[in-house]
Amino acid sequence: MTDFSQGKKTKKLTIAASSQGIETAKKALDKLGFELKSNFPKSQGISRYTVTKFFKSEPIQLDLFKRICEGLTLDWKEIAGIAEEQASEQLNKNDGSSSELVKGVEPSQSLSQKETVIERHSETIKAVLVLEGDINSVQPSKLIESILQESSGYTINIINIKPSSLILQGSQEAIERLEARIKSEDLKELSGFPIKEIQILNERSDDEDNSKLDHKWCLVQEIASSGAVGRDLRGADLSDTDLSNTKLSGANLIRADLSGADLSGADLIRPKLSDADLSGANLIRANLIAANLSGANLSGANLIGANLSGANLIGANLSGANLIGANLIGANLIGANLRGAELSATNLSDSNLSGVNLSGAFLNPMRVSGANLSGTNLSGANLSGANLNGADLSGANLSGAELKNARFTYIVGIDESLKLELIQRGAIFYNFAGEPSEISS
Image 1 (spheres, rainbow, N blue to C red):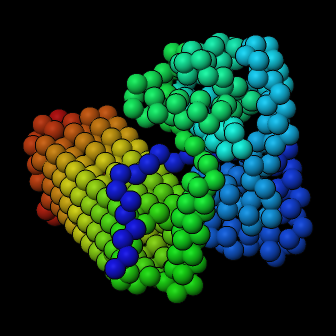
Image 2: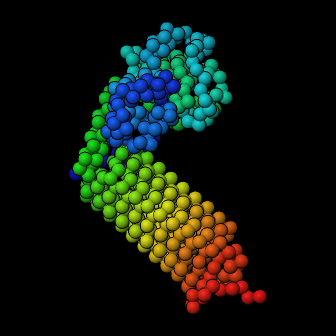
Image 3: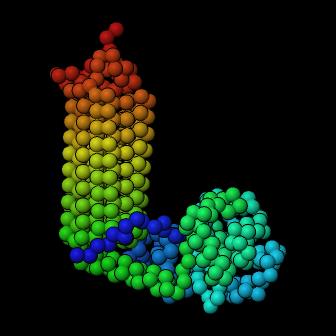
């Protein structure tokens, strides 16, 4: 039995193409012709959204960056702007003076995070360091002085500063010493900026990475062509892949990484997706009947028209998710986070929403007849036109909620004083005869 789990997840390095690299990539894509160009994302097994980000020069995962460049028969390092000629020029500027070290380095945009890619030459290493903060607030010479000081006498050069990377170069000993101090947490910041990560991609690790990538894309091709019904895919990395319209019913995807994946129209009846990462995934019209999504991360996911009837979503994170027209009849959402979610025309009839956070959610119109909304946070939610027939609202927080034309019939947990307040705010309560209640004068 194949186990795809890799234990503790490592931070994913991201990289963006340079402006010159984008022009080169666009020309390569145009050469494919209209049909191949239109089908390029699918042919590479990568979601269209990710390919679009690549061509917008936005940071994407390094493995996906390499995959796209390989599909276009391009050198990923050249497209990223890590030019070989620039590196060789820097080897001749190793006297330690700040003015020479930063010569030719282009200023970057404001950075919230920096990443480090490192490549091994015969006696030197190129590295990309992950820093948090705006490094533009410090002169490159100051960063160099800090690096030189922290590396205890070794010479390390900054050879390029890009919107998504701070690229260093130095001897193998210098970089490895710096890496050891960072990983041991002996060195936690550089010139006042917290250090997030450093990684060395030498020849050996490059081969290992390529082997992992080959395995990932072989797996994607297998699933895309033959499906994975009932297959054990625990912990598998399927992030940013195109698995649209695939058959994955009954698959074991516990703790799998499906972030950013295209699963639109996929058949996912009764899969095991507990603790899976589906953040930002495209699940439009996906069939997720009776899916186990307990503890799953679905933040920002697109679930328009998805069928989640009878699904287990206990403790799931659905913040910012788009659930327009989704079917959640009988779903268990106890303790789920639906803050800021789009729930218009969503059917939540007979679902259990006890303790759910729906603050700021848009629920107009929504059907929640017979739903358990006890203890639910509905503050600031838009419930205009919602059908709450038979819902249990015991202990629910409705402060600031928009209630115009929201329909309340056979409601549990609403006393007369709260009922009058809600009517004044636009809610409509129906009596047993099916007639609207009126406020007594």
